[in-house]
Length: 228
Image (cartoon, rainbow, N blue to C red):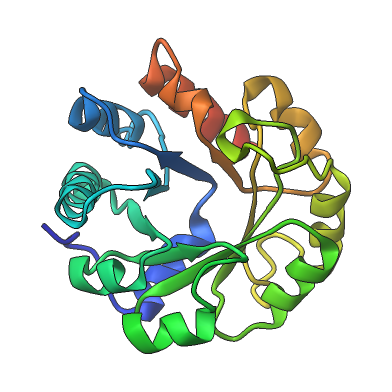
């Protein structure tokens, strides 16, 4: 069911501006308990945004996965993102559509998802980042992968130079700046080096999906991100 929090564009943008920890995840056998663990509690912070990213899902399976995320994050106001599919995003009524460089162009996606849905875009070079930053149909940007990762097979790592450039052009938490997230091999072991670039928002995958204790790992990452 949809989140009870403000689902207008302004409400979603406020939650996005405050977001630090973004999870991309496929489904798995214990999906709902996993989601309930990583969204955290009032005492133990967790992820602020969850994207269902699993290529090749049937329509009904993807809708089911998005509904599970919506239900698990409803009480915490967790933002929910679909990947690539503008039609499915509009049908499910989720908060965000995330697209890559080779997916539907943001301007065309906007015509499908409407004005209230947020759109994020992945970027892998300074030129792509600056173009996304200037694109009025893009609400946030991901930069990376900064480290090699099996979740981005065939995509060479961009290193830490791209987030340094991003921090210069879009200082985090400047009200005039568009939010951006660092992706690619982000974990507690790599987080401090990423934060040293000026980044303040990150995307994680295996740091939580492969964790022995996802709740504890999410809380540790969230606390570190909110300590700077």
